[in-house]
Image (cartoon, rainbow, N blue to C red; front, side):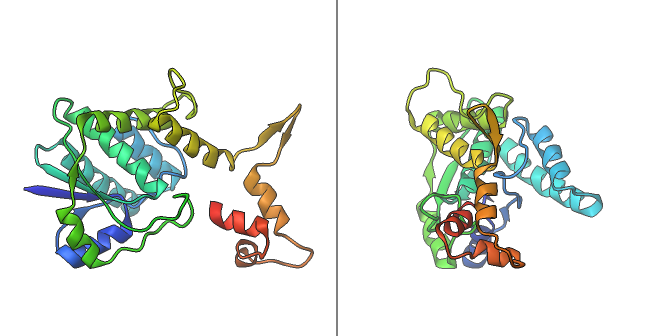
Length: 236
């Protein structure tokens, strides 16, 4: 038996329509809010961050544990993902948790679909057709144990207490470059130290640059025809 898991809503729809297969999925953008290395802690933090209560919290937990149960099993797991950074973070988490439950055989197959934006951060969707899913099933490739370990290590770095940019040795390897790219993106949402004073975050600077004397709607700000507006839309 093969269990299908995806990190992306658009891919989930394509799999359901193109292959008529059940696929496990948790709708959650990990680029926003806190994460935790351990799955149980992570689930509760995400529920708290999105302020999920009652049935919504129960539904989120149920879908999350469906994924965890798959990772605990001895069945073949196919993970469908994209080049979006939100999907990359989820893939790191899946690798870490698969390794946690099956340290000797953290076997995962992976299918990458969709045309993600160039930087991988802007726009949280990918263009995927049912036919892409049908072709993708034949292109599934196994992740090596070493690759799973590398992704798991990146997840622990992102979700741990240490800053995301800190890493042992400081080598310019693939994992280091990924963490630097992610950290650079996230830094745009935080205030910065300029000399001896604290300044606005980059995203706040862009927001104020797109405001005029007249009343502006959120759409006016995001679609502002300027270099600041283009950069703001890219971060959004």
